[in-house]
Length: 205
Image (cartoon, rainbow, N blue to C red; front, top):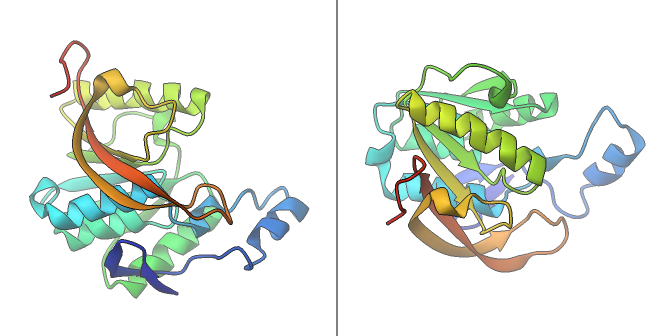
């Protein structure tokens, strides 16, 4: 456990290259890749943005989608969000989110679910940290976010400019230099960005 790169206000239980989690995942298919055990560039940027501009979520109901370690949801809670739900499809992430929220003395509700497969949640803001790393997932996430916009739910996306971002639908809000841990064991410096997701036909500003 320790402070998070670019987020000294937050402490997380994470894994390093020598933790052995990836070896466990290879031996046990039910375990799955331990994405939740590492911080990703998009999540770091989105969490930093929330802490720097707390009015975005203060007093609002928030969904942290693809929450992993829960860092974005924790930042939202620290920024004053009224309710924070952190959703992920990995049951091990649920334990990580609960533990990390407790470590940071905030209330975050873990939810084992794929939000893209269900109705638009009863929230005010959806936060998407680094979910545009695969083409099929990108299509599914974007379709869900369109349904959110149609229900007057705001959407913020954090991402290190991955190939599958719907760039024509994004308005750049902030950029932060920082690491991207999506490739385990390769700690490259990158530029991690925060965007608002805009309705179709509205040119990004």
